Amino acid sequence: MKMNFCLLIAIALCFVAVVLRGLPVPSSFSSKPQLDPLFYSKTCPQLPFIVYQILWNVSKTDHRMPASLIRLHFHDCFVQGCDASVLLNNTATIVSEQGASPNINSLRGLDVVNRIKTAVEKACPNTVSCADILALAAGVSSVLTRGPCWIVPLGRRDSLTANQALANQNLPSPSFNLTQLKSSFAVQGLNTNDLVALSGAHTFGRARCSLFVDRLYNFNNTGKPDPTLDTAYLKELQKECPKNGPGTNRVNFDPTTPDILDKNYYSNLQVKKGLLQSDQTLFSTPGADTISIVNKFGNNQNAFFESFRNSMIKMGNIDVLTGKKGEIRKQCNFVNKKSSELDLATVRSRESVEEDLVSSI
Image (cartoon, rainbow, N blue to C red):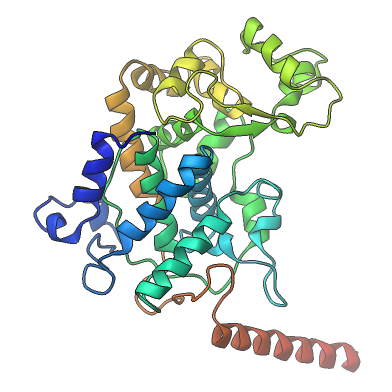
């Protein structure tokens, strides 16, 4: 993996505070709540380089990691906002989002985020939030895989809670149809163009057979394959995912450039080679307004990159905590001790009240 021009731009331009002062600020930054790409320019100016260095080293041996980190950021933002709640482990007072159906045994990159946090804490103690680290990691991951670069707005704080029930409710299913997908994204303030652009993150990475095997053999309980699947592609997938198999095999989203963020996702949809039902429905739903967007992105990578960049910034702004809300965690997988003690005291107080109510009946 050679360092490309966009990577140099990202490190020297997108992430360097001194240079940033001379760049125009995208309109996305002006939306509420206010985030600022220069947020750590004085308190932790080396932050972007720490994130980049670790991810560069990781991606040399784990080509899947960039896709996993972008997915992790997505799964964080869709559940009570971009607040690093997805990173929290189970504790006496927290039911981790990692145990939600869309996340269980599938989230990757948690250890990488923790490694970055450890390095950042050594350089800038008690300064940088885990939510910002995750947002930066997603941006660097795009650049490392030849995707677009963008100036990451910063200033998020970390949540004191997680919400597994909301993760089960808000995260879109791989079997969603177009109406369900649009509804899921609209709840987050994201429009149809955002839906199609962010779905382009499926241009790299892998998916387990269990997520789409019904398309291969028993689509919608018809006893037949999904008719929107290309016949030759169907046979290839059936070899990778045998009927009544364990469903644990992983298949590339894009069989041609599986580790590169490019427009091939849309080119695949145009020839009925979308891996998940939620992918192919963007192009194969009759009369859908998403078809023209898929065609635009499939024919023009620059158009895709521009929309992907803007939609990632927009998604990264969802319900963020700023100011004095939340906290700056010392460890990304646990809330700080004082917050945890307060939370536990609240739970114990509530349990005591409930016990009193029960005993009084």
